[in-house]
Image 1 (cartoon, protein in one colour):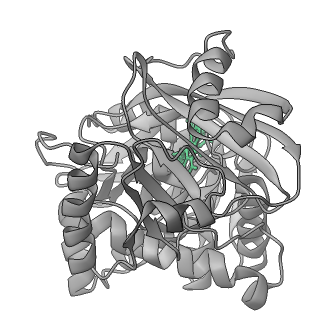
Image 2 (tube, protein in one colour):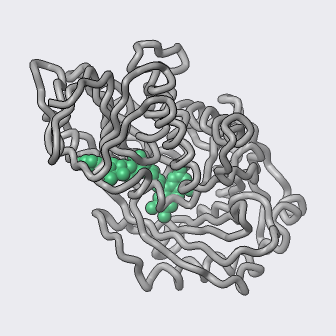
Length: 384
Ligand SMILES: Cc1cc2nc3c(=O)[nH]c(=O)nc-3n(C[C@H](O)[C@H](O)[C@H](O)COP(=O)(O)OP(=O)(O)OC[C@H]3O[C@@H](n4cnc5c(N)ncnc54)[C@H](O)[C@@H]3O)c2cc1C
């Protein structure tokens, strides 16, 4: 058997890599295992890079506020370009019902300290010049939200984690967990076996398969989403635009202009398309382009460079599953990130470190209530 580690992380993705960085910097010996060839090769690189603390509950808001601090100061503190842009998020409303829903939610968001306000149509037209004003009632605007490149960010976190002493084994598939009593004694791959004091399941789409290796179950199911990116053009609008009006075929869609001037966008299919189906479809463009151009006619002349399909590792209620398992004490869940794993990753990495070190704060315990592995998954997050 190879050397023993304080912590083995299964999955070098949006969650596993920043967690490895934080844990290694806290002085723990860390091994990250991934069956693919390099960091961030599964869902991480499918994300379009949106980063918001604009959620509907304390847990996600707090974790993402910390993530935003990390993303926003990364270049200044760590020296790497990760494409951070403090462009904000906006949710425009085109009906009195939507306006009320968003304003009611803002009351909750203000209670949890979120910087978000309502902007009237004329002001929104300055943030997103040329937006369709017909029946526009205004929009939320949260200026501290932003965006970054998932490709640049995961590699920045990866190299800094290597410098902090984390080890990685790529091209190794985890095939079993060796239990001893009520603990995980070792993680078994198709090439080796690694003894560990604790294990973190950060396996994204494969969360359920990994949990089953320990005799556990987590309701995480991959849910397919497509994204696309245009050619770069001069900046012409500010915030991420999230249109949450459901229409036949899609629940919502969202787009923004990234740090290089490219417009990146994706849509939430309705009904959901479950399973892992990596192929792009001919349905996506007609559906999303029609909606985007109706909302924002200036997008019509942009040329799309490429599209892709990936998965959200979804839970039934839209909240992640994070925390120590109730029965296997040294098994830590960090799965079910839904459509927000990239934005949750850095904040969660630090939270996971405090969990591993048994140093949770009162705020952490409050956060973890929303993410409890043993909850009944009955509620639904308003902005999932
Ligand atoms: C089109 C699209 C747009 C999105 N946009 C955003 C966005 O704007 N903002 C945002 O925050 N999120 C976004 N997401 C969601 C985001 O991509 C995911 O929530 C996030 O990447 C999940 O992170 P993860 O670490 O759980 O999984 P991953 O990043 O997939 O990492 C899991 C890793 O585990 C490895 N693994 C699995 N099983 C095994 C095994 N048996 N052995 C070894 N390794 C294994 C995999 O190879 C993988 O590398 C988007 C997703 C899609 C598809």
